[in-house]
Length: 153
Image 1 (tube, rainbow, N blue to C red):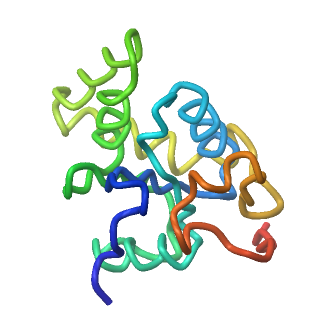
Image 2 (cartoon, rainbow, N blue to C red):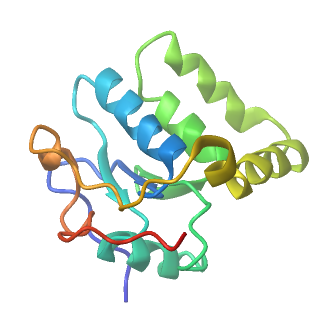
Image 3 (tube, rainbow, N blue to C red):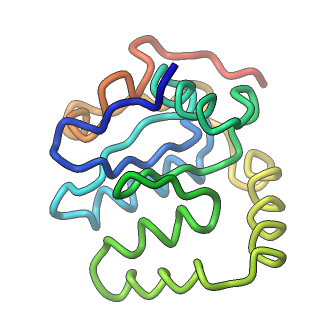
C-alpha cells in the first residue's frame, strides 16, 4: 500500500496522532485553536489512513507512540514532528521550531520516555477520538474511525 494521498485542502500538511491518548488529543485541540488558516489536517494513528502511513514508514501499527507529521512531502517523527508543526504556527509558537536542532541522542530518549508513559501520566480516552461536527472537515478522509473503537485497557 502506498503512502496516502494529500488531504483535499490543497496542502499535504497532516498531523497523525494517537486518538486514545489524552495528551495527544489535547495537542490536536491546541493546534486547532492556533491554526487559524486551517493549514493542517489530522488523522488518528488508529484510522485506516494512520495505519497505512505507519505501515509505509515501517512503524509498528500496534505501537502508536510516534507522532508523525507530513509536511511538504516529507515525514517528520517525534520531536521533529512537533517542530514541524510549530514552524507553521504564528509567533510565539514558531520558536518551538528550534526543537529540530537539538541533538538526536538527547531528544529521542526524552520524547520516548514521555511517549511510553503517556497513558499513565496524562490518561487514556476510553474511545478513539471522534471529531466533533465543527472540526470534522479538518480531518483527512479515512483519518478517523467512523465507529468508536473501544480501548484496550
